[in-house]
Image (tube, rainbow, N blue to C red):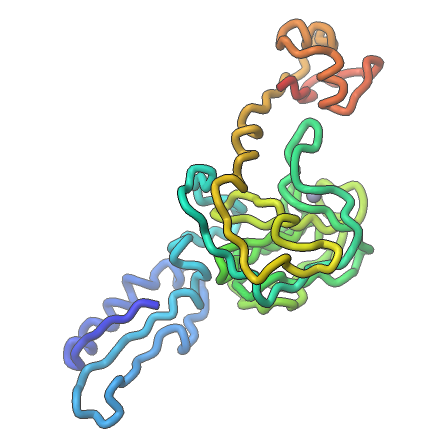
Length: 289
Ligand SMILES: [Zn+2]
């Protein structure tokens, strides 16, 4: 919350200017400027002093403004170019009021998935099942992507962002204010998906964290009311950056790729989920490190 003190006469002059300069990106993004986001308060009810306070609840417009500023992309899951892996100290994340988006069996965890990294948790569901919002916040993205299918990203006041992917139908739109437990959409099988499931991500400053560190997926409740996020929770990023791929060209075989990259055929097979008898496709990406 930002508090400005101005005298009444200055207020009349400065206020329109202030609104124009401060909220121009919002106007472009056509967020409704609700009256509660900008209000004038007379701090002296008896009127003895003509001092006014402009109270800007910036969090209501851009949740977690202190962390993200006015960055508010409707297309990029991680537009921030931040590297929380290098942060010092700890960030306090308030987990009170959490709603588990979908109580179900985990079909894939966060982490290395042989040839790629899985940035979320997969939860089995049936097409049309309810998917609910994890915390209060505002919808930043609601669109269709090649891999995610229909997906929604919500920015929360506690500093996290959550992603809900492969939905059959999205029931919110960009800039909607949402509460914990609100219906985000219906589960589905859209995008790069081999069966109906919810791909659920938690991110801080665009970088994914393992939701299972914060949430007990058995009970659907946080382990505690808060979580201290540190650089150690992003240690995997360095490992991901070390991953290397070979793009299959004419004449390539597992043996030639092994020779050129220095990886063993066994490693190529186990890392890429293939066997020695597998036929390689031209353009196929083979992870060798
Ligand atoms: Zn997934």
